[in-house]
Amino acid sequence: MIGNFIKMKVCQICKQPLKTGNIKNEYGTSEGMDHLSRHHLFPDRLKKYFNDEEIKVFFQISSLSETEELCYECHEEILQNVILNKEMITNLSEILKDKSKKDRIKLFHQIIKSGIDSFYSNK
Image (cartoon, rainbow, N blue to C red; front, side, top):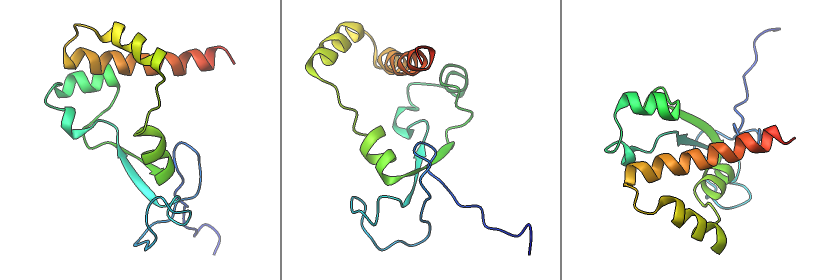
């Protein structure tokens, strides 16, 4: 029938089609890399530093339960394993020096956002 089709879920970063359901392959294997993984936009462990209004206004996240559907590779291997070299760590240390944990979280968010904005403005 025309109009009856299943919408394929895709990773919101790399746009790779995602496998859903009870996948028996382990994460980190070539078979498991395209398994659906939900990424919480605001980590639960950080909510003790921010109220709901701050999360909405500063981070532009509408609720603590908001997620994105990603593949394992983008979720675990890119977002959760940020690679910084020694110069970046030194510079980051200078920027974050003497800041509260809350301010460090906000500054790191701003740094990443500025980098993404700069990338698109220089294209």
